[in-house]
Structure formats: C-alpha cells, structure tokens
Length: 359
Image (cartoon, rainbow, N blue to C red):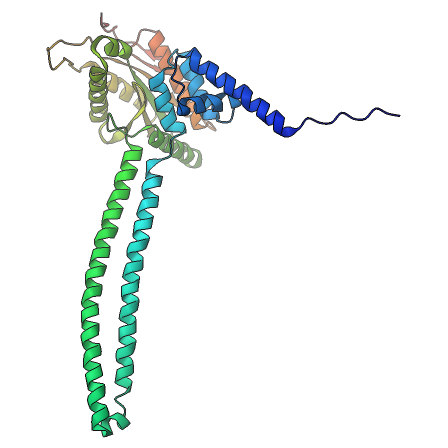
C-alpha cells in the first residue's frame, strides 16, 4: 500500500511566517541605518523586504548605494509613497458641504414650485361659476392675493439662498484649488514637488512616443550641500535651497518648469528640445548658479562658491521614464565623480574650472 501523500502546509501559517520574516528584516534595517522605529518608517522597510513596492524599493536602494539613508530621507519617502494625498481629504469634505448647500437650494426651489402650483390652482377657481358668485369671487381673490404675497416672499428668500449657495460653492472651489496647490508644491522652495514632476515626465514620454518629439531630462544637484548644513546649520541650508530654486527658475524662464526632485536635487523635463539645445541650457543653468553671491545675513560671512553638478539625458526610442531618469542620474553621478561644477550628458561631460570648496 502506497504511503499517504504529505499534507500541503497550511497557507495561513505560511503567510504568517513570511510576514514575521519581513517584520524582522524591517526592524533590522531600522537598526542598521539608525532610523527611528516609527510606524511610517517601519511600514516602508516592511514593504521593501516584502517586495510589494518596486518604486519604493528603487528609491531606497539608490539611497543605500549613496549612503544617504537617514531620517530626513525616510520622511520624504513616506510622503511620496505612504501618506494619503491631502487634496483627497479636502475633496471629500468639500463634496459633503457642497451636497448640503445644493440640497438646501433645491428644497427652496421645490417649495417655490409648490407655491406656483397653489397660485395656479387659485387662478383655476376664477371660472365663470366663481365670477357669478360674489362671495366665492371675494374668497378666491383673497386667496390669490395671499398666494401672490407668499410667492413674492419666498422668491426673495430663494434669491438670497441661491446667492448664498453660490458664495459657498465659490468658497469650496477656492479651498479645493488651495488643497491641490499644497499637494503639488514643495513647501520649502515653492517649486512643483516630485509627484508633479513624475506626472509631467510621464506625460511628455507618452507624447514623445505618439508624436516622435524629443524629450530632455536635466537633473541638478547642489555641490557639497551637506557641508553647508554641517557648518552653518539647516536654516542656512534651507535658504540656499530657496535661493538656488529661485535662480534656476529665473534662468529657465518660460522654457519650462523646475521641480524639486528630492533633498538638494532639482529636475527639469523639456519637450521639443534637441541635444545641443539641452546642453546649452544646462550650461546656462550651471553658470547662473555659480554666479550667485551667498552670505550669512547675521554676520556677513560669505559661503564658498555655490555650484551645481548636472546630469542630462535624452529620451531614446521606446524608452520609459524610469530608464530615462536612471540614465540622467548616472550622468549626474559622473559629474560628481569627475570634480563637480560641471554637466555630464549620457554621452560625455563638459568640465569648467573647479570650484572652491567650503573649508
């Protein structure tokens, strides 16, 4: 007699075992990088080890390769990958308020319609029979006058309510626009945030695929930014970020929009720009930043040369946005390795004179 087939393992314990494995790995990663074990950070490492969020995994692996995993990065990634979008919550509140406002207005209009029907019924009573009966005629006219006064009062009331409803709707529209702006804007620099940039790049890549248009991606990173924070403090680093964002925006003009890509990194995605034009633009952006004069407001102490390294890549046929970003990031990394204050493309580098580094 053949031996009985072994019973397959119970799927629930297996799932629990895998979850515990991911949980232990998540806590190990928190300890490895000295990151506080708060729920959002734990959740991201759990997702990473579970392999359920490829984009999150790519971001963490890139940061680990650069030795840049810290609490600030974890906060940034939690906003990008875990936190609910604030405009969704605002939209739900606004729709609830708007629903109540419209119901109130519709109720007033319905009541006005009932008044019109009552007035119409009173008019019907002015038949030949009513006109032949003085008493009935007098009662009908009294009723008509009363209905007319009621309609006038409620019409005026309806006008007030409709005007009030219109004001409420306009206020709600403004609130939604403000919430959408907040969700799409980097609070520190006022630039578009990473989510807005990703949406724009995705749209440009789709248009390029459909229409055969060139697309250029420029990644910009402030050189030696960590030294600024370490020597002068984060408020000065924040001021440098704002100044650089303003300089890049002014230099770019109406040719495109600068976005904060993360940390001290900025990004620009351009359509209908060929390689030579993109290289020239990247060079002008680098020069504009290098021309900045940055001194501490309190003491007048001048910072060292403020420069940026730039990576540039042109979209290839059939390429997706993730691959384009990866190649631009590789070009940026090469610019850092080759001395900073320069632009490297996905083909070659352009190297100006070295900048003076903060001591």
